[in-house]
Length: 573
Image (cartoon, helix red, strand yellow):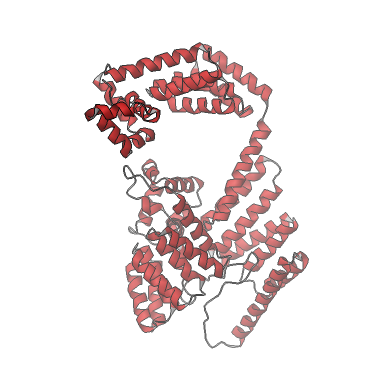
């Protein structure tokens, strides 16, 4: 029978045997070729095998058979995204949201597809061979589904590592020594794993967990698959109570939309009394308390929903929603930076249950608010000046690490002091920490574009990094604000000397090789060399003196030629 084959397919999917799942779902389809759920399930299995073309065909069939079922569009979007058809993926998710505007899976998929579409294409050289493994919504789905990695997702340091890897797959090499990352990579590559991804919320009959319909905000109920069966007296009574509870919820939703909050609470409370196995009634009441500003009551309901949801093994999205709502209430109650800590922790727990873009946004906002408040609470310009003076004393004694410590404390007390950034940049330069020195010098200029020290610090760092053309530009920019500054004038002179040496070929082969290697990593140099017009210009300089003479009249062309000369890429004779 089709149901028996489907059950086998579900079991195989849950154990991570996706190939077997495909076979069983195919058997079920042969027996029930008009059952849209079977095509949806097989699409999920194909997607887990990264056979996205087959997944797309099944997703299209699902939508064809039941065009008003939102999950079909979720499958369609995931398949398109797997194939790299990002515009089609966005379109599919949007169509699904037209049917079910509150469907979190569709919202999450849409956010991921739009983010992927807005990212520039990965560089052809030096990219991670596992880059695709970490893209799209499937990564968090698989990590949440696997018992081992699901536990890791409750650890903030692991969560941050995986977020960093997803932003830039090249960072994988940084974290490979962590056994948790290796375990996660195995799960994502389907190597000896047991997983049950988010997309496998298969139709109702065969899952060992009781999945609850997604709660409205409050809003309309998502469609559930009918399960025609004969029921006895007790079951009939229970079903009637559930039906009454749903009517109370709908009445509560209507009252909520009208902002009749007291009435909404009454209806949700009756729904809870009639059916204590649907935590959406509790989270909806929590939403009302949140709107009313009764944050303590909201938090109590959210805690109750989480506890009851775990007892019932409810859909993890519902548990995540309760945690997110609790975090929102805690943010509303926050009066100082420490008050944000429990809210941030709660949002992080919610993300381990279900990676929802709205929750992630709330987490980022809470972290920023906490940081801003900490800065406000710590702000003291007088103490900042004292710390800067202590740093100056250590600088004079050539105790640069100690000076950095005091300059850093000065900036914590007053983050808008360009002098502290300038002084710390000088310390970093003395210690050879050039990237840190460059960052501080640039911040100094950003805070006060007329402060000449910022330009001398930045130019010095660039000079030591042998980026003479960039250093020259920095010194010249500083001279616009302080034309007679001797440090800036000396910097210009030193840069011109080094550039002229390169153009005359007066540097050692080792230095030339080093300068060229550094230059080839510069995006600006790469763009010049990849420009067809500039390639023709370089050819003309070698083979066509008359054309070369014309090129010298073009200031933009000569500026680019000068950059190549400064970088040691070409020489003018």
